[in-house]
Length: 122
Image (cartoon, rainbow, N blue to C red; front, side, top):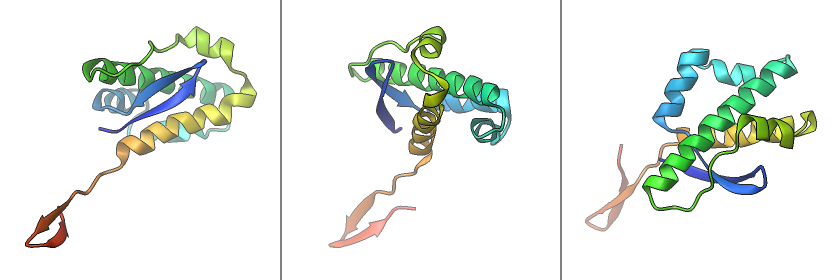
């Protein structure tokens, strides 16, 4: 699982697109629906989706960090995020959320040497 670190509410925090996060997104938005909400025409709906998603990603990042002996502060509350950012930050916040989702969705292919020849596992 890939974990990324981003500066949010004054501290570096781990963001993790875990299966728990994926499940919560699907339960709330259905298949593929979160990305539509993130780029929606309604700023209030987009803001709610971004803050909700970032909260999930940071909570998952904190759980991952704790389980793997990594230093990571607790996720800020939704209220803290709403107080620390303005509408002018919305695009950056969306970028943070999509960075974590994109990183979590990437598949890694490991190369293995067989008789001196590199091959790709499939």
